[in-house]
Length: 375
Image (cartoon, rainbow, N blue to C red; front, side, top):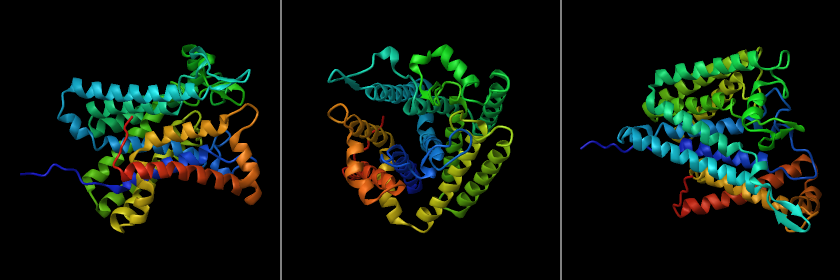
């Protein structure tokens, strides 16, 4: 009898865990000081450590998809597509409700929520849901060669759209880009994010196209690991293709700058290449050298990534809204403790790490009890 059980790759849990850990750190800087520059997004063009976090999460989504395709092939197309759509809807709904929850504010001494017609429609979880849905369907219907061709076409088409359909001379600015024009026409400004006081959504409709490519490249990376197994062949292939993508992204940057908010094609390639290189390094440390401490620390967050991310956002909003108007808990605790003991950017980082460790503890407890929550 053949054994169809797939081998376990702790590397991917570690990668997801590191991504969620860093995501929470950069989302929760302590108040009272400006964080270190790598923990801030680039003002517009460019790419910092923080700008690598979200595409790495999408890359990890693709990694996971490489391990479920075989299961999909054993089901009918109708069943599989229904399952993909259901999960996409649940993630999108969770994101929308989370966005609505964060509109809570004080009015005449009581907490109220914004009406639904003034709630932002797209945000981080909503983008994950859309990218997952599109990528999963492409993965289900297309072979690996088709996915590569489709990804290249998506990135080239997106470049064409941004260059030719934005305002002349302003195509890659916050006000003149075509992403903003489409979102204003389809969503309306009351349902969009404001960037620097300007209505512009960094998780808009059109920029979902290149973001989906991050998922697809993550899937192809997962396939490299599955086919190569726990061998140096997997590390070499991941490293080689990671370097190719990083170089391609940097070269494209000269004519189509790296930009997270526009999610430019060069940014999609560059961040995917970084993801492949990081996975290659982790693969060597975890699968070859057996660094169990690395696995023990990051894996718990990697096994419940979406749930821990949602939980962290609920915690964040609690410490921002506090229990009464005019007094924010995060400011109070930083003034009283963190900025007094660790003044400046270091105090901001220490607060973020302490907050993240609270979330890590929840993930560790869930993992210890073998509770894994899939949105």
